[in-house]
Image (cartoon, rainbow, N blue to C red; front, side):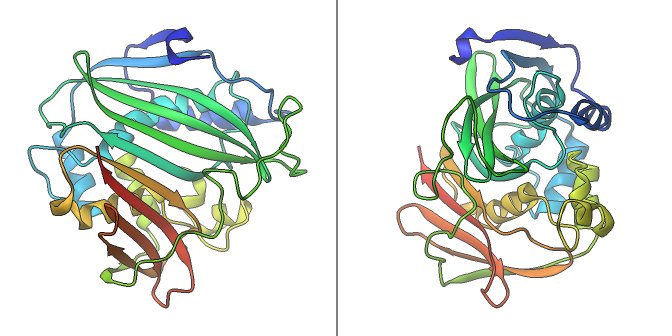
Length: 301
């Protein structure tokens, strides 16, 4: 099914993330697992005016500079409430809580101005078997009038209890063929660009600005319930911080492909590494290089 085949559901206002999270908890209880289908509609929110004060707080937290154009990752923050609403729906095949963000791709077709009014939309697609369960893509799009200025794709992994990865009789993807698997990454750039010391409350601070209040980011106790030894940093904070560090080198139109490998435990110290081979390759690792947290590949479009 293509995007044009999906029903359009117009929203009057951006969904409340706390209410959506509560709904996701309620609808996830007793859910049997993958149904083999995704929601057959896309959500559209028009007339979106950007909150400059909130944007300033976001830039401050992620290392960006508030200017005329917004950071590319800011558009993900704006479309995330629509993605969350889709994941919290009863027609979404997996419980919302516990889904793991394993990859992200964003395309900025041109710089988006702070003063521009946006039309946001989101839908789900590409349900696929995976050796650890299933993956699904949540797609976001931002338009100015009829012009598509930004597109984002977040790939989530829903882990099956039995690890079968069966969807409608399909076989699980292998490590070799899957595009968004959690596996050993590409060669890590050697040049150290920055060192960041991440405090234990980073997850709570990011949630306060971006609205993503997934419990695994908020406290060690909640994170342990999902198998993590401590709270973990939001992948999208790490993504935003990495791109902010190289913002002066980014072209006006570009694509950033990100893979989240190992979670960043809080508190911790991490290192941003990079080079300019075939575009721009970035990686975030532990200070000693033993843990590979995230890879980023930036290419001009």
